[in-house]
Image (tube, rainbow, N blue to C red):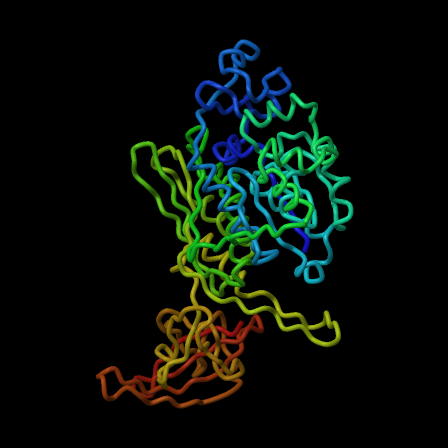
Length: 473
């Protein structure tokens, strides 16, 4: 077996602040003691463990927020669901480590180095700082990352060498046990491994030796694997109120990357998701994004959301955002040919339609479906893109019909539209509609104008007048 451990050392800070750009120094406090701080605060001497008053003495402009346990748990669960795209065997080591059993996925994802690189890239895109290590046991991988040591240990024989330099604090013993270990001169895991097992068992209980044996692979270390929720919902609290919709895209993209990973883990896609904005006055705005076909492409989601946000004016400042997707749909993979062929690749019309709808509105973009009717103005109807589309014979009828036929004059027995028309084909006689008191009797012709364009005209059989009804593209 091979385990990847992901440690999120800045989780208390990033769970609260990952949705905002940080122009100022920030820190998170728990009971008036600093538990995490950003790079700007560290450059001014602020460190985890010091009191909030000492931190403010070092950096008077330091912004301190209180730790949110629920936000940290939600963020850790979100990372676990996202990481399941690499393996179904994901376990949690609270409060800040995610474990992935990856041995069955190495060939599928291109090897261990590729997986580790993809993990780092995805976590950074979601706004998380991560320490990643690999070991043959979950316990050893967890020890390595909690000590801040990034290592790729792929052989069980190298576990002792890899963990021997780690401080004994990685054991997560109680304070009395750590004090006793330090009293006998054991500062590192290697120091403990060098001591007689019988003496350690008598003084510190068998549980300490069992911990070592699980880390070294000599005892089983069963884990309960994480199960993703049936629907996606994730949110971010904003540091400062946002008054312009476009400024929400930075935080929204981090949630969209998380959504894409969740969908990949379930081999699914979504055809609709919603961005929910919580305002200062307690109200909310929902921005629904619809797609023609199910997808899980984070970049495409971001593009569609950018189009929508660019056309929205916020009625009130926004304090938090959330993305929800309830209808999770199976997403089939692309079928590849035996031989690569780059010729004749069709355009991605679905994405074009989605982008146009995001920019112009859903009602402004639609398809055409055929209707069983001889009258040209009733032979087609609006339809949802992706439904059974209208198949037109463009040589016989034009694609573009006027909203209503336009009367045109007749000069010397020839219809006139921007000059005398030359009749090229016809007549096509259409007599229909007697059953609904809107019957027609027309002779249609394809005609050429003086500028060489083609038009569709007809002559009323009852009145004799000429009308322009369509244009050939």
